[in-house]
Image (cartoon, rainbow, N blue to C red; front, side, top):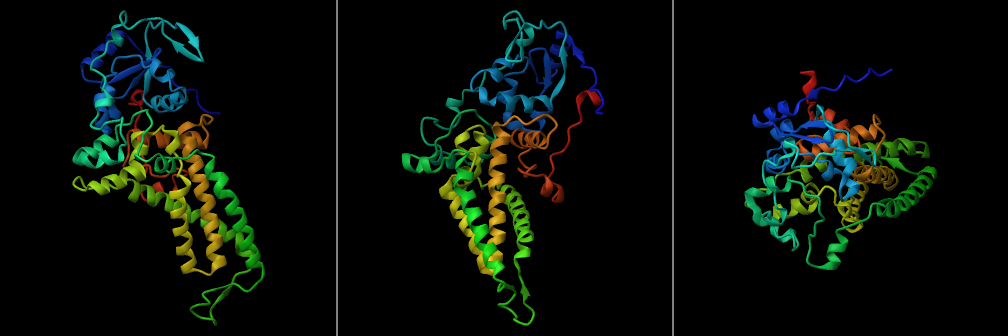
Length: 372
């Protein structure tokens, strides 16, 4: 049986005000208090935005539109919970959330400390496609792209090209699962003929027969190979830091992954669109086809293709799903939220933390304030 959680710590409004005056960044949701000071230490690019909310009740931000992001924001916020505000009226309960009866004017804890950032004046013109603008940001790009916004992004002037850069989540299984199943059956049939041999192109004498019984092992090996590619691509390609004087490399980074960190809740850009995805998938197949017999490379390919589909579905779910607390996906969702909002240079695994363990890029555990 899991141990009971420790009792909540209570803070008086005066104590909270003293901490705010000392430079801490505390916010609240109803009566629950959250200390974001440590977050700012790891993510200075968001300091102006978050300090603008210091001392405020952010319930309206979490429960207001767009409602679909509320669970994601709350899950991210919970890791910084420190206690409850003393004497906070419970108010009414709407949609399972405590809503305070106090108003901003009567509650000194909720007084704003800074003016909110006006994202319409944020280095780029949001009324125009961003891809042609980001290259001009230069040395400001890396900080700018890691200041997330909740708004859709337009990349291209052309409506046709813009549509090809977006995709609904279900396009991934609808397009790639039938291909994976067809190729799996086809390559299994080829192996069942009994004339496939590994290393035959190098030496007939030492070649190895590949019967149909090797299909499950090759398939699982393909899944394993994809998990490594997932990590390497995310770490070294998607999170490369483009030179500040390279207009085109900044554009390349933004179109590959930067736009996802800038607008992490733009659901039209959370899975790979079919057209650019097909180019990467075709390249993966050609490499395997050149290195291995067709059936052997093909089975590895379909295993990797299933791994890709699982990866894209998990990635979408980590942003918009609501996994059961304590489940594997719940922990992966928290892990991915930290990657987006605090630790962009670690936590590269999406479907698994396996390679983060192996390459020592796990997100460091933050000691809870109450346990210090």
